[in-house]
Length: 275
Length: 276
Image (cartoon, rainbow over all chains, first blue to last red; front, side):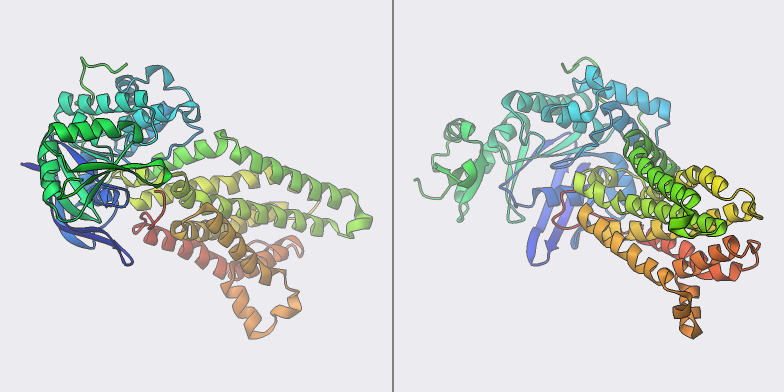
């Protein structure tokens, strides 16, 4: 059974098309990477699949539950939203207990779940600290713990490493790998970093302007991307640019070039013709 | 750091089919705790108590300055309690959803199987505790100002009834504004403007509210009906049931606005371009 199935998903904001004719079939237990530049439609797609946004057109199911039953879908999914906010005055434990209770756990059970999850995301000693005292990396791990309070079948992680230092990124990615391995849950990881996808994901989807540009393993997607007439820009952290280029070269993709974007971003451009 | 020898997710984690039952209570309890323990509620109450203390002190001691008789002084303190209590409720409700949106915590709430209505009801209930706390704090002041006044019990009950009706109405207004506002600042600004606009007719002299238009205003506007009703109870010593008809608008508004807020809460969602 597919963990996620989508047909013809479309979402627009005024004249802007965020998601356009998106078709998806994701096998259970897959770690799927959503790769694409900012504005590609990754967050909108995740918000639709997690039932926070309604699509303008199309159908989907998560864990075999049709989109017409959003409450049941929410019971089956865990989500770390992009730029998730946290109540600064609460402790991590209070926040997790609150969310576990909203999923129907009695308070005592919720407390036990919160303590266990805090331990499992590496924050056992910070559970009683106010969230405002936590680093961004700790908050992201707390956010992942929150996404797990309901024992989900599918976990959506929207840019979980955004703004983290390399150590924080490693910890979060290790956590993602552990979640996928230990429970066999389906993980959808949204990122704009090729290296993360290569490190964690079984399969990659590249989105651009709301459309699915490519679908396959990292090597397959890179190969296919070269055949696409338009350029494909992969937003890569500046310090990982050479590593990403090397990865593409190792996979037989020699039509890649690196360029500096604005605001210190770096891009890898895949084109039909070698640079 | 990360234990790898035990399952990440408890096997006995809750599963179910429908929206979480009793979620409104969970939201309300968390909001109440947040209101009072985070210090915001206490800070507002302190400011309110200072205002009430100043009003009471001036009206009770400085007869030459205020020219108020005892019943008028009591009525003024009661108005301050009801008005400021209502102000606290509308401000808290105005922040309830837009604040979550701005802090980026709304999406996490919407991702739970809790019904949107439960979220809004819980937040509304927690805001009402501010009104009840405000009124409880006002009782000693009203008792001091009303010593020797006949029917003081009616005055206290009348204040509670009118204040609760207005607080319910303002909670509905604040929540509706908050649900449609992308920013906290916009919802607070609009709510304050609406509060002042709704309050304005009640501040008009009685002569301006004569005739059919005045009667209509008294019937429709909860403030224009509510405050003159309190005047009848406090200043003329009427029993609380005698002029109850004046509260028609307040009763309708106290039911209709919260009901509308709960009705529209079903459509509560992220706004385009909002952080969450």
